[in-house]
Amino acid sequence: MIVFSGRSSQYIAKEISEKYGLKLGKVNFIDYSDGEMQPSFVESVRGKHVFLIQSTFSPIDNLFELLLMIDAAYRASAYKIVAVIPYFGYGRQDRKDKPRVAIGAKLIANMLAAAGVSRVMTMDLHADQIQGFFDVPVDHLFASSVFIPHINSLNLDNLVVASPDMGGTKRANAYANHLHAPLVICHKSRTKPNEIAEMRIIGDVADKNIIIFDDIVDTAGTLTKAASLMLENGAKSVRAAITHPVLSGNAFQRIRNSGIEELIVTNSIPLKEHCDKVTVLSIAGLFADVINKVYNFESISSSFIL
Figure 1 (tube, rainbow, N blue to C red):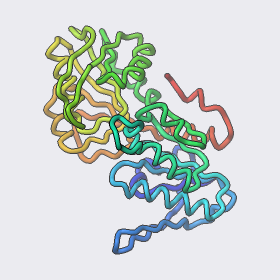
Figure 2 (figure 1 turned 135 degrees about the horizontal axis):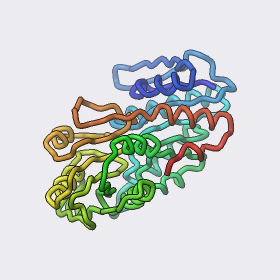
Figure 3 (figure 1 turned 45 degrees about the horizontal axis):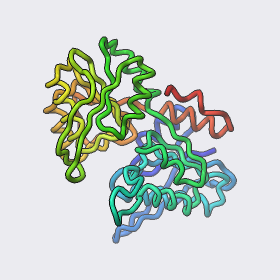
Figure 4 (figure 1 turned 30 degrees about the horizontal axis):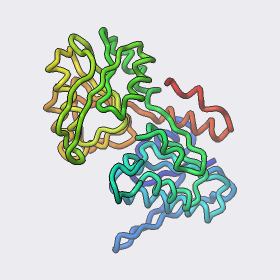
């Protein structure tokens, strides 16, 4: 087997390959003056099990770079090509929520398949049904493997698990059952994307230590509004454990100015800036373990906590 990485995910790819005990393969990238890019593998991949690591966060160049690497490996006669995508971009476009819109997640799945991918490995998809968009096997991992040990180390009493919206209820309920904690839900309504019109809490948060679970934190508007609402209703403390730190726009400023005590995230996406309230947990060990099991045709069920 051999492991390569796109340019935006070198930081996590190096850590994954080190934990696996392999050196990261070398890729040369040529950037043309008009914006075109061309990756080429320095070493032969003929007949090899190739793992390509790249999160597809913004800009879209990261996705296209991965597609070109898959195509290059396919045309170089790789035996199997596994796309390791810690953060699957466009996952929020998983359905038609209004007329005349694209289902972006399905389009990306089609593009990966067309490029020649044999398998996809990712973490905390925005919606579970995205796995069904692929006609190749999908290994869907969960950040619970790193979140739960950290939360247990905090030794919080009167713990309550919260979902920031109705869509995240299933995920939050799984954490609540594992942590033996009650569940509360934030019900919100939007007038347009990234803007909340109204929010209210369903459940009791008075004198409780709250942990909000979600898959993505983008502008942090929902998260900080939910935290403020919970503190206004008597919560003792509010933390959040969110897998993918997209953190765009004024997100860092909102978090700094909010009542959130700690924002726990993974390194599926590199942070754009430092923030004392943000704790980053590495998922490299989990991906290295699952890559090893996939390569050796072993079950990956033991890698899941939830």
